[in-house]
Structure formats: structure tokens, C-alpha cells
Image (cartoon, rainbow, N blue to C red):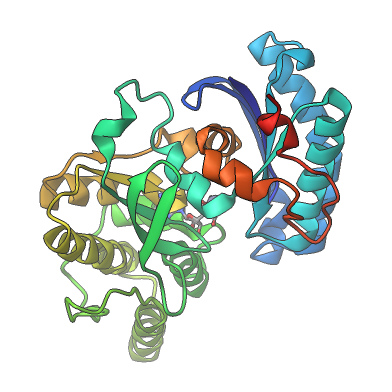
Length: 347
Ligand code: KG4
Ligand code: ZN
């Protein structure tokens, strides 16, 4: 089954063609980072206009890269949320028009759940051996830990009570005057720093509290920076140590919570890690050292927002008869009047 995926929830416009949920035939991603950089974050209206400008050329590029004619597409999958409403509207409207024009089903996909499928792209092993699994989505908007019984079953075990992990990297980078997005910049500086040098608060220490928290860590960094500025009038002296110490706790908190979830769920057969922060090499190293269950991370291009993960997840949703039944005739977003799943139910 060949699925065209479309992603436009935030500041990446992306189109991909994926066969049978895991074989990526084409994946094109246009990042808007440079457009938003002067503002220090994503400007929703600007993002929507950029999606509108980029989406059609990206579809042509993806078809060309895969050497595929649009008639060969079996279904169109699109991120329906969560995301910036104007940005989502562009992808959803475009996907609806395309599906209607081709006479193919339209599959609405949850962006956060789709991230998890980024970790399985290109994996050839039989997926049934992966479940029950624990899945982590660690991005700019979410720090979610799930228990999964299959590719479309998600039970949320823990989420952040305040900032998301990636958001905290971005805010700390801003406090340090490093720029946006903060994650890769902090990782680069942290590589030469001493991660034990500066004390950081250990967030959500109690093992039985299944939640994440990042705003206290951000405040601790802000206080440390202010104290140092007052003490020596500079503040830039230990930048690498500060980044390394912050990063250690930001990631350590996730590894700790995952370890206690593994104790509670002893039948876990795999760990799927996704989202922008999954690109962090220290995170991968810590996981390899601390966690004994096999962990799967996406290839670097599929950690951040992409459309291959959208098409991959949609493939599994399309196999799930219960989901298809529930979806038929249901207006799945504020703008929908297209009975997207009907074609899947056709005899
Ligand atoms: O998944 P993503 O591209 O977008 C969302 O859906 O949020 O994640 C973006 C987030 C940003 O906050 C960015 O700073 C963070 O992921 N990030 C990283 C790294 N690369 C991206 N955080 C830590 N280390 C990295 N190497
Ligand atoms: Zn995302």
C-alpha cells in the first residue's frame, strides 16, 4: 500500500511517499528555521504562509524523487493536529483537495503518535515482536511516555506538567544568548563541557510520580547565569560546563522515568524513541548505558517533523478495522466535510 504523507503542523513543510508503512520511497522536508530565526521562535501566521508557498512544489519533488505517478498513490495521509491552526489548515485543505481529485481515501493522523513511527522507518523485523513497547516522544511541544500494545494503541503514562523537554532546551539557549532552535546548539557546546561541574536540581525525584517537569530546571539555569553575571560581570566563562550540566539533567530525568516504567512493566519488549530531542547523541549514549531493553531511534532526518512518519502511522491505522469503522462519516476536524475513510471500507 503506497501512502502519500503530508505534514504542516509547525515550521516544517514535508511530503513523503511510504510503501507498506516502513519503506520510504521519497521524503522531502522544507525547514522554515531561517525564516523564524530573527523572531526567536515560530510566528504562526508566517508559518502558514510559508506552507502555502511550499506545499505544491514539494509534492512534485517527492513524486519525481520516487519516480511515481500520482495515480499510483493508494491513500493520502495528513497531520490533523496538534499544531498551529493556520499551519494545519494548509496541509489539511491541500490533502483533502488531492484525495478528492484522485478519488482516494484521506487519512487524518495525530502528529504526536506519528512521531513514534519515525523510529520504525526502515526497520525490517516483524513488528509483532516489538510489543508491548514503551514509547517516548521528546520534542519541542511534548514529553510523552506511552505504553503500546500495537502500532495504533497508545496509553499515555506520563507527560510534562509544564514545559516540554525541547522547549526547555530552546528557552535555556535563549537565556544563554545562543539562538534558536536551542537543542543542537546546546548539544554542540555541551560536548566540550564538564557535566558534573554545576549543580542542577533533580526534577520529579519521586519514582512513583509519573510525570515530567522542566520549568524549574530552566529557572535554575536563569538564576545561575544571573548570579555569575553579578559575581564576575561576565557570565560566559563556563558556557560549555553550564550546557553540559543542564543537558545531563534535562535528559537524565527522562532516562530515570523510563527506568521506573520498565520496572512497572516487566514485559516490555522494545523502546521507541522519537521527536527532535531523539537526535541528541548524549541522550542515545545515556539510553545505551542505562536501559537494557532494545531501544530504537529514528534516523536523523526522521527525528524532527517529517511526512514519512505521517504516512507510516497512517498505514497502520488503515489496517485497523475498528479505527476505519469509527472514522467513517465522522467530521474529524473543524473544516472537514469529506468522508475520508469511506473508500477504505469499500468492498
Ligand atoms: O520534533 P520537533 O522537530 O518538533 C516538534 O514537534 O516540537 O522537535 C523540535 C525540538 C526543539 O525544541 C529542538 O530544540 C529540539 O527538538 N532538538 C534537540 C536537538 N535537536 C532538536 N534537543 C536536544 N538536542 C538536540 N540535538
Ligand atoms: Zn513534531
